[in-house]
Image (cartoon, rainbow, N blue to C red; front, top):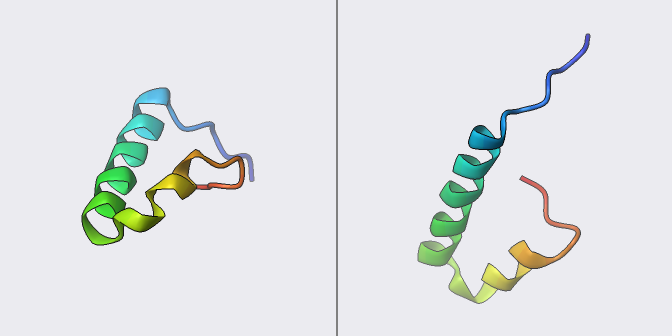
Length: 40
């Protein structure tokens, strides 16, 4: 089964969703988004 790459728009929306969720619920962990090991 071949998976298609997600569109840049989808990736951007998911990043923003997770960013603001984390900002609201656990702002002390927000810096983790900017590490190379962060996955959506």
